[in-house]
Image (cartoon, rainbow, N blue to C red; front, side):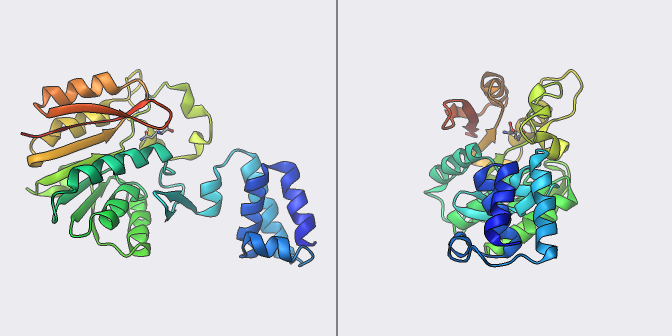
Length: 274
Ligand code: GLN
């Protein structure tokens, strides 16, 4: 089969851009190659792989898992079904973190529930001189995050464990987290590819709960882990900003605020230790 015919075959079953990207993946070529060589032949194995990928996409599996990569903050990250696919709204957390670290040249940064490592790796790249620690409960996620740190040539110390548990007595100038925060009964968990993502990265799993269990653990432990003047910044759900600010206030954090993502939804909240 020619490239042109394969492209048409894929386009009939899935969205145009997805079809193109999967064909490029199978052919190990660029968009320009596809256009320049429409009569190039796919071997049987390449077509079988394209057919399988197109079927998986048609079943709703996210494109990022099929390609094995996703873009975040202008960088390409490896992703597998062991990690959440990075979302554009999480870039807000990076911007806010960078703003707060501008004056410190050797900041200590902690990323809790790092997943694919997008926050830890992006901050390590953006804040040269900072030392970055990243924690996750999933060893499969840490393997992906380590790959991403190596890919982007940054050093991050990765620790396996539950939130603050593996940290010893270290304190930090900045703690960031994009934890699981979708309530267990939220119908969104059944849609938009979410069933393919790791449940433990999306929801705290508390039956009948509000989705805030992980944020409670992270915010509750932050006072003892921040250095004086240090910031905690957390991502949360579309309707959780007020509850999160209240938890931040209970910990005595100052300069409490919430910031909106590009959709105008309060998506990140944070505060500073005195
Ligand atoms: N923002 C993600 C979503 O709604 C959830 C990410 C998370 O739980 N940290 O799909």
